Amino acid sequence: MTVNEKIAALRQAARAAGGHGVLLATSDPHCSEYLPDHYNALPWFTGFTGENATLVVAPAGSALWVDGRFYVQGDKQLAGTEIQCMHAGAAGVPTVEQYLAAQFAAGQTLLVDGSCAPTATVEKYRAALEQAGAALAERDVVSPLWAAERPALPNTPCTLLRPEQTGAAPGEKLAAVREALRGAGATALAVTALDCLAWLLALRARDLPRTPLAVAFGFVTQDACTLFLAPGRLQPADAETLAAQGVALRGYEEFLPFIRSYDRPETVLVDKAATNFALYTALCENPALTVREGADPITALKGVKNPTELKNIRECHIRDGVALVRFQMDLEQALAAGRPLRESDIEGMLQARRREQPGYFDDSFDTIAAWGPNAAMMHYHAEPGADAAIEPHGFLLVDNGGQYDCGTTDITRTYPVGPLTDDERRYYTWVLQSHIDMARAVFLDYCTGFALDTFARGPLWAHKIKYRCGTGHGVGFIASVHEGPQSLRPNNAVVFKPGMTITDEPGVYETDEVGIRIENELECVEAGENQYGRWLKFEPLTLAPIDTEPVLAEELSGPQLAWLNAYHRRVYETLAPRLTAEEQAWLAQKTAPLAR
Picture 1 (cartoon, helix red, strand yellow):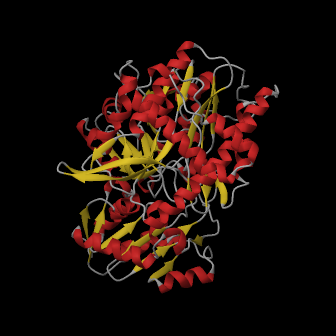
Picture 2 (cartoon, helix red, strand yellow):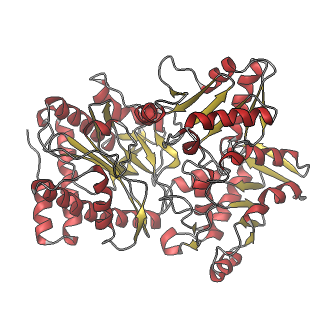
Picture 3 (cartoon, helix red, strand yellow):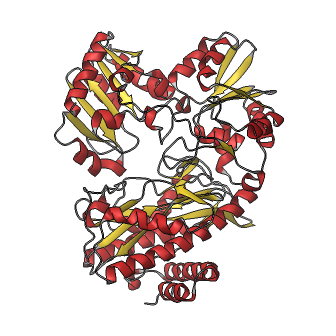
């Protein structure tokens, strides 16, 4: 079936179910960012392979909303279909709500699978439809259409991390969650987010691509905790370990029936943005349960890494830095020898070097290796047979990361692979200035992600350039490479605290011309206290050279130049003991002080 035929089938299925259109978003019963293939229907129906998208199939048209990371990719992948690519947030582009109100007439109904849609989203869309006299109904017409090709639910073996990895046993974390629930006026919590459950119970699996989480639910009360996981996935010894921590086991499919039949009075804390609509409905309809709206306390608790996690994370970045040094040497040697390289070769080269490091078991996301114009697509992924040859001019952008037994990494470097234009050098220098200004920020302990985000944007704004995404995101611990609640973006109101980790990744993305990004992970640390208050700053976690060959050094301020040279000194001193003499000599050259 073509994309247009699949969209027509959705319309027909909606009519057969008493509706007039369908909404399908990137989501699952756990409101995940990264989905198990079992729930990731959007690529099958639309051909769009990016993240965070929303499809509306209306009676007389269809549209897919993509965020700024995927404008170019969305335009390319939807070309030739009936689906209109909507650049979410761009001037003149209607929101999903505005489109629904315009496309659905009085008496018409939009169908949504409530098990795969966050409650807050459903309520927002329902309100928009009601303004036009239309309605929203919970009905799944998507699953039957792709049943023949739909992947099975993941069922990979589960393991528990050790206390020397996590720094706290599940029982200790349960106590912290129960205390937070009491503080919020609640007694219970349905744990639906996979990363939250992973943090709480030290549970890991390989159910998601590149993200070592298990598809499961949890239910926590003041005196009990139940893990809903498919039978047979835990080894008996791990099941006994959880039981000793007060955790009971039930089947994954038992979760909704358990909620519907629960008969003890509880006040359940519910975050509508992170709770699917079918679950929310079940909670509200159970007379024994009282729903109290509020944020899942686990999100905030796991966002601040404990001393053991931070020690492990620092070790993780040293290992990753060694792998990145060797990869860059391999890349330079291949280019110098005139070896033909394509974008799709880069991922394997990186993986070969990471596999040499102890504790590495996977990448943390699909490598973005983009040469020249392809790098303007922020989340471009090279596929063999449909990728570009790396020509000996311009830049190669490489964004990648690793999953280790001591942490998760995310790093971007933009490598010159031949002569550069004046514009490419200017763009690179401005991105580096933005990166440095964020990394060297000193701020008071009440600053939010929104306030800090502007530190990075100044150098690019000075040239009237904007990147259509946040400056950075949190990173999980042996978990998802994207983690909240903290982020560096204009709408983030989370106050930064010591122990939070964040990426610093400003960029320039000029369509069909060039893409440049420089990314390090940073750790928020104490910076002292005085009469004005408590001060915080960032320390780099990522340890890999930033290429200085493209830099217009005269454009760097004194403090920016000092930061860059100090960072490179730290990179060399930390990595050199684990490198060969030849690698040390190479790294000494790459981290040599830059002067005007």
